[in-house]
Length: 96
Image (cartoon, rainbow, N blue to C red; front, side, top):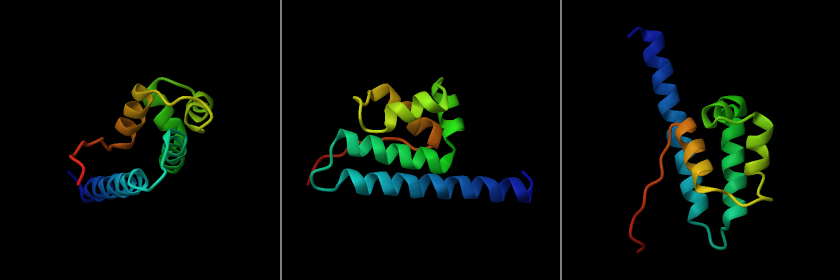
């Protein structure tokens, strides 16, 4: 792996960690609901590149934005698809 490829991989890992931390923080907020989570996913998808995320989910950018704008129900398969495209994953833990 070249130095450039190593630097690019490191940056991608750091961005994924930052997105995961942002979403995790939002999930732990009081009064956080489905539409707010959808909008949080929309924000990180836009920052990552909506066209890439939508393509990974098999949708157009416009369709992906409509699914994540918080006005329609958020489907679990959409959540998983976006997270895969962003290079992050959900984790379940026992509540404190």
